[in-house]
Length: 446
Image (tube, rainbow, N blue to C red; front, side, top):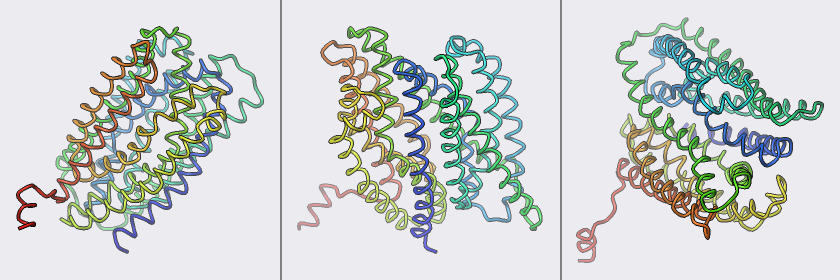
């Protein structure tokens, strides 16, 4: 099977499962919006980035680094490779648990909400760590069906639990907020049991096959060379997402918006407009999962022509679904946002965010290319520069009374344009796409 066919097969499996999962996620956010209200949804969307930051640290970016190593190395090395990764993960997980247990009680979010919230988050750390090993291995082996089922399970379990609990019981807002995170932890537990059970079965099979030893120091250096910068990238990304709610609300409060209204507006932006606008992004994330090991394997083999052809296919497919998607969001913004709240603001936010959504559909697979090509530092620097520009414009324009949330969204759009251009030019340069210079053009015309 050719690399393009293998890529398309894996992508189709992930896209189909992700589509059902995104429908479930859409329903999850509708249930949360109606149960928590505008203020509660704003609070939920403020806490969630910090929870995701902790979960990202627990994963150690093993899905990226391990999938790249598994794709690059022959099968005879896999058993020893996985053994060393398991030992390293146990040590890192124990250290993170102790560190999180000491720091979390001093974070204001965990102080201001239900006391059980920090224990729920702590329980998710070992689950995320060991699930990441399974994800990385199956991604590297191109077993995308298992990844697709795991992604689907997480969304469906959370949807069923939320629908059942909120249907049969009434809660005050703090308890209802806690229930949302309990269902998130329960869904991660189901995914952990499913994926890690399959991983252990595969690991036992690998032990029965004669294999060759690998240098522990070399493996750990290879993992850290990928996981280190990638984790730094994700930490920065998560920190900026955790800080963004406070920056946006502070800016529009300075513009004269009352604090309660600022919280509600952010809830409509993050909980409604973002939920709708990023709905098609499941296709981009499916590309990303398949692209990282595929690009890594082709680049290790020096197959630059195949990488160029693969990039053309990805960009064309992204254009074919991205443009119609943002067109639907723009022209049907009001009926779509009314599924959550009857709010003219939410519809307006969705409409003027169309460049942000469309360009993110391109940024996600291009970031996968950067990771597969080993250009993690470049991806990190691009994110830093785009965030600095975006946050600066968000605050300057968002704090002006005549701009408010419109200025915030201009800043978000600008940062995405900058990141898209930097990602694209870097990828094209690495895979050997050369732009004609003036001197070359003169030679052609002569």
